[in-house]
Length: 238
Image (cartoon, rainbow, N blue to C red; front, top):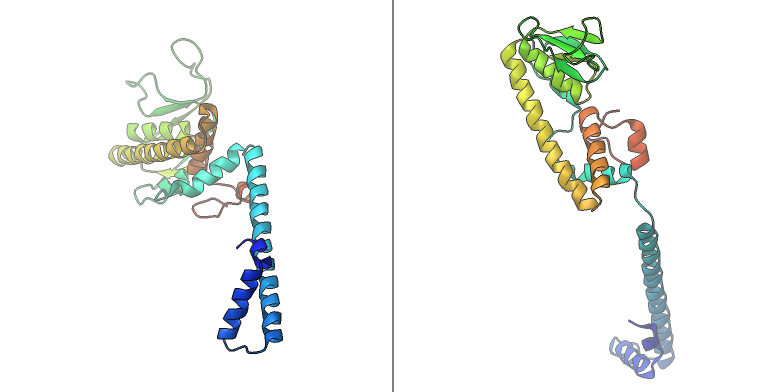
């Protein structure tokens, strides 16, 4: 209701008549009630207007500043609604068939042996030297329990997993877990791509958002990241 309407004589006459119908017989008392009603109504609409102005100012400030990649990613993360956000190494380690502890080096990339006839179960870490591959003494390597385990280690290493992690030892369960890892990462990547596209039309920024989301999906979110972006701890690392 516009406050100007409260100043109109016909409005005051209408409210006076309403109070008379409600049983207020004294003209002076009705006048006081009408005045109090109009004052309270005016204050109410002024308060609403103040809130509207504050919201307009907030929207203006929000529109004028650029959100950081972390903020956009945090917003997308909260909207992801994936069935399981457990960090990858922890997710694998909880599986009953994953009983073999391995220590994945931090060197990248990880590659299977270029001599599968002689060392099919060996994984090499770090940049290769020379056209045909790595010299025997270069970088580090891991001798795995099976070729399936070697393939699983290569996949985990190249998506950023390092340190101790429990994996299967035998060929079949390793390949089964590898297939589930690939499916899990593919589903997350598709969801993150869609979320990034819904938040910005800048392809470069979209890629940065997806990279951040994948890092959180693979490794969890630290306490510092949660504090910086105001996120909750559901599915996040401490």
